[in-house]
Amino acid sequence: MTDFNALGLAEPLLRALADEGYTTPTPIQAQAIPLVLQGRDLLGIAQTGTGKTAAFALPLLHHLAARRAQAPRGGCRALILSPTRELASQIHDNIRAYGRHLGLSSTVVFGGVGARPQIQALARGVDILVATPGRLLDHVQAGVARLQTVEVLVLDEADQMLDRGFWPAIRKLTGMMSKNRQTLFFSATMPTEIAKIANELLQDPAKVSVTPVASTAERVEQRLIHIDASRKRLLLAEMLRDPAIGRALVFARTKHGADRVAKHLVAEGINAHAIHGDRSQGQRERALAEFRNGRAPILVATDIASRGIDVDGVTHVFQFDLPDTPEAYVHRIGRTARAGASGEAVAFCAPDELAKLKAVEKLIAMRIPAEDRRSEAARAEAATAAPKPQPPRGGRGGRPQGAGRPQGQGRPQGAGRGGMPPRAGMPERKDRSWRNADFRDGGR
Ligand code: AMP
Image (cartoon, rainbow, N blue to C red; front, side, top):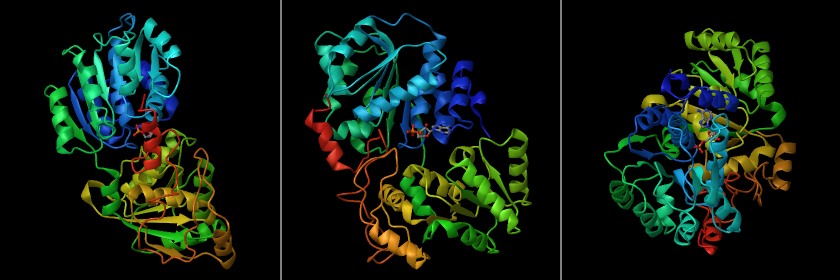
């Protein structure tokens, strides 16, 4: 198993990653970071949720710190272009978090807000600039920003930038940069038009790609069980007694939840361990060893802890709780279908998790075949209470599931109007209202 230490990143970056609780690089990080550190141009095919931001941000920060230089007045050393202000802000937050021990300067520039603070920050010069193309072009044309000093250029979500009509602006911006720069190009999809643009911008690029989330969802046999929160533990124990279960990962949302579930299983005579950030290294190693050798073939994990579990042959994934972000649902079910294998994934959904379910089904663009094992009381609760959006997301919620609709077929709920809003600060590809909002100010 690769860990971050093996990738050749500077010590202050490793420290920041430890602060963040990251232990294992995601596949796109493991593939991309060594190549970018070598100075190669990169063509990355990866969606949001794969860890792609750190895949470019970490080697970029490493490069800037390794070759310290004065931030150029009116310019920057690294430029990250993003299609939306939400994504730009999020990238900037990540840059600050990963670079917190490096003392590099950064700023973010996007439309829809006053230009003056941006002009002041640009005039001083920064090491790293995150920007939407429209507003940055305004600054460049006004003589406020210069791009000749860009050493590393990142284009994130290139397909979205093309969709939003940013390509002419990007071409003007790149035309002002030195040809000696390193360019990292990320896109979730690679239609011919994007491939052509990549070809124009990149020099002998290394290529990395990770499985898009949708295809993981297609490979795994998924089931959903509507169940009262109070009866989840009994149902889990009952299902885990099935002899067809070889090795099962059970996901819980919190560390305490993982502990409670594992304790209950042990009390029911099922060999299970919990694994999460509060467990000592020794406890984690023992749990993993027994999971691997089959002595305790049930492991209850939090999402973060599960990233460090590199075990093939997981036959079943149970989601005791639905995750806070829909992408995590896909990561979880992907644990049972490694290296092209198939697997079975079962998710429990209590009445108060319907909004999360809706977000998941919107992301994977399918309705998960469901069965209803709720009590009459829980069914009534679900039918009357509209699902409330879970913090930190906001929004309108929607119609409860399981009431008056056939299960396991038809379009996913929330795929059209009135669906769950995207994850806080994240663009959501199919959410047209949001897109229009960005267009209203031309992304500037
Ligand atoms: P991204 O695809 O860049 O939007 O990242 C998706 C989420 O995964 C973000 O919330 C990151 O903070 C988180 N993340 C990225 N890399 C790792 C890692 N190696 N371990 C744990 N979490 C990570």
